[in-house]
Image 1 (tube, rainbow, N blue to C red):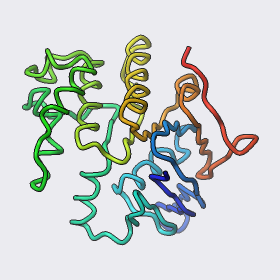
Image 2: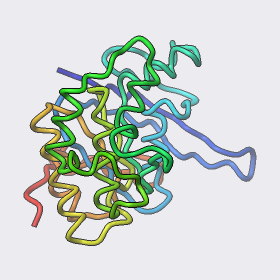
Image 3: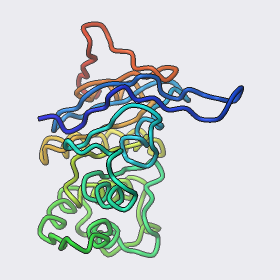
Length: 234
């Protein structure tokens, strides 16, 4: 089942001689449960694409559909609610609230949504599987970088979203913790049938994903045979 459709996306920044075509006619689709890496050189348009899919920015042309909902058809309030219910974000800098403990950080997206109750059994389950249940009362400053990134992943999973968008999620982690976090992302994809799009500059990490989308100079370059397939993470 297709969770995401991106059709002929165009995005431009600046004006006249300072104009930059960040994305040029990007099209692809993603099925439920796929773990996809988005790779490319710095400034190629990777993060711009992720921001558009996440509803944090809008394209000049083209269409983005998540669970068949056209993001462009939603007003600002509707988009905020839709994003909270359907998209989980994992950032390089974790973006945890320093005044909240691990548990409260994780349930924050759910508590923002007045129409939803917190499924405490589910939260306990994902915290347990991510090795955080015993640390649930600690604050971000009391956690290692890897533990903070696990908390950020748990928060992204809390609303059972259609998509998890991860922007360089291992960028601040050492090599051993990077492998651990990648393993957790892959496990989340498999256990929860979670669909994940991950921007990374790390080719080795990309090879561990189900599929690789390569962006250079704002264009999507399919590999030979039309698709790049990942292998096992060494």
